[in-house]
Image (cartoon, rainbow, N blue to C red; front, side, top):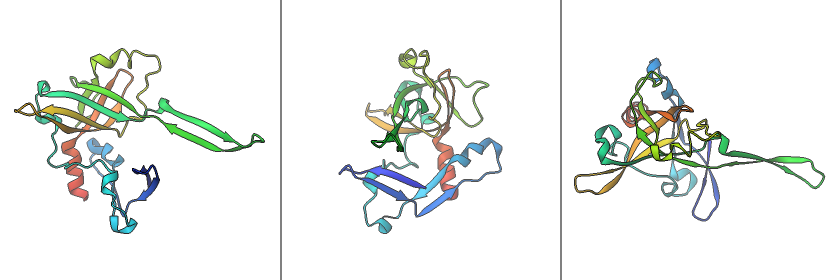
Length: 198
């Protein structure tokens, strides 16, 4: 498994994990946990300080969506790569022989809101949906397709008692549908997985 990261000098760096853990579970309600791949990076192996290349937060102490009233949450959002935003451009030489294909994935940002769970929601998930303010431009458009958003992180902005704003982590998308609904594996369960396997 290789992760490609672009650094501050616009150089592309390929990273491989020094320790890679694949999750396995017998509990069918946690079957999506098997999609998780835990990767640890040892900076001494690359000779580089890798920390600035990653978004860093304290997962154990970060705000969790279940801990806040809806009125204390200013925004819920996800950033991911929907399949229909990916372009495949063939590369040809002067004799029109194909040399390869350039793949360009464009990220999408969606604003979400909490909604009532229903029969569509798998067990142990948070129910979210496209925010009302973005629904017309997304769900009602003919080309909306959430395919590719599985695995995308869901963050949120919340306010504390002194009206200060903070970043929270709601979880990771496991399911999405064309009605604009999202099932999110919550932070609490992700922490349990990391404590068990890390």
